[in-house]
Image 1 (cartoon, helix red, strand yellow):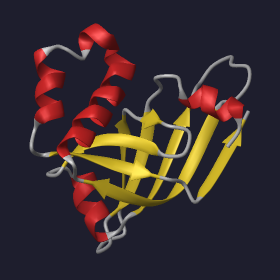
Image 2 (tube, one colour):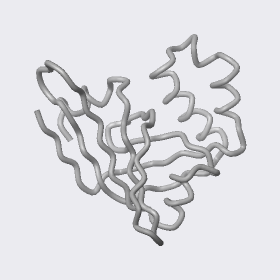
Image 3 (cartoon, one colour):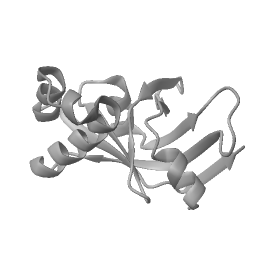
Length: 138
């Protein structure tokens, strides 16, 4: 992965996560917050959501992170591969979830009641994608 891509993914942009229902093949695309550690993309999710239910049956995902407007450098990153559902240990879930939320809410905002309850919620898990394929464009 390139330094330029790492810098792009360090920005708190919205990602769009695509899953597919294995029965109907209907795609499902949702905006998500993420964290990029240089090798894997991490997304906080709740067990009861459609995306997680679909990932349990079909772990293949696509994720796009892009920007619009007059931008120099990278405009988009597309990642594809098999997502892993990380359900523990609890301290890893809380640490990684807090890291993702802090990227978007800041160090003060993540301390509010709502993000703290989400971080500790028993429904919380992490979607981890170590991409098999990555494409960038300017």
